[in-house]
Image (tube, rainbow, N blue to C red):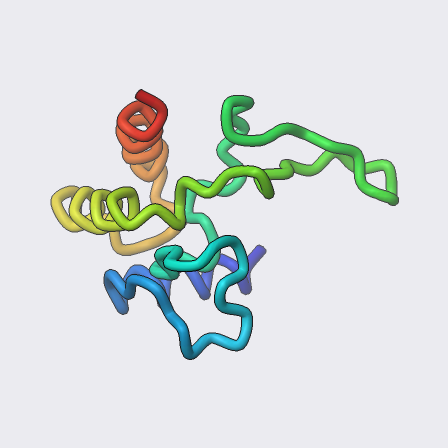
Length: 110
């Protein structure tokens, strides 16, 4: 999890990116996706409208958000950057990310 938090911190410092066609994995979800967040800063959100808990091969319950494309929506990515800037969030484990998630998902699922 530390490696993921480190990657999210880099993405937060870098700012909005948009589609990253130079990435060897692009597009990992769909053509034109926003690649600002390769790793979702809300993981695991545990919002069953966006994913579900599954049991892995070791019998451990893990959050599966593979069907969720919210983080790759350009409007969503821009709103996240705007809100974390307004709130002064600089670390991916800041508990205020939950408030940002609640705001973002409410607008996304409308």
